[in-house]
Amino acid sequence: MSRRRTLGPKKKLALLVSAATVAGGGAFVMANTSNAAPPPATKSAADSTVCQGLATALGNNQKFIEGQRAAPDAQSEARIANREAVIAQIQRQQEASGCTVGESAQDSQAAQPQQPAPSQPAPSQPAAEDGGAQASGEQVCNGSTVTLSGEGGAPAASSNQFPAGTKLKVTNLDNNKSTTVEVTSVSGSCVLLNNAAFEQVREAGKFLIRRAVIEKVG
Image 1: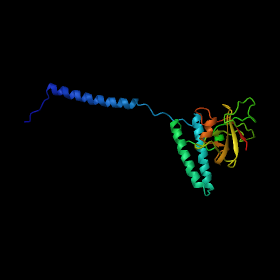
Image 2: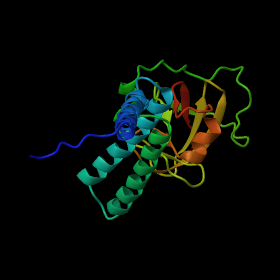
Image 3: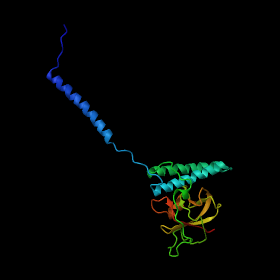
Image 4: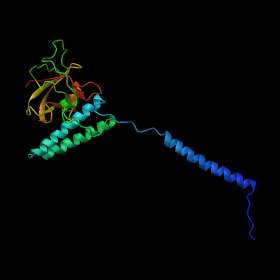
């Protein structure tokens, strides 16, 4: 006849402590999991001016690439590679700004209803902050918004309406800053400023100029 083994009081106490520790640890893990903060929600172009500007810049570059692929020439491959690098940089800016990465607006005017620009800059405007350029010329691209291409280099612009060598004066009516730049390449917008030119007229933290006067001065 087999003898039944019984546990002494000390062993029973040790087993109960071990079980409580395991259960408590599991509860702690579950509590930590349930209390974990959800990841921050990303913002769309409709929620943020910064995101809208980045989405417009991304869309302009994508549109440019589509145009190059639809009608390629000897330089298209190099242009496309350059714009793909610009798109990658814009996407990094979208991530850093909490925007939806990869969101684009193919047409900046369709992305946001535009306020009509006045026919001429207000006469009370202070001196332009573009190194002294005071040229005034034919107003073009009425109602267009202005954003940046993401390209580096000296201040310059790209355009789908004006050939290389054309000089355009861009005035931001929200802060009365102006810059006069030369068109150096093709883009999907009437005027698209590179990073250096955009810095001369931008408002802090904004990647889109909604109220702009664009003049052809040369």
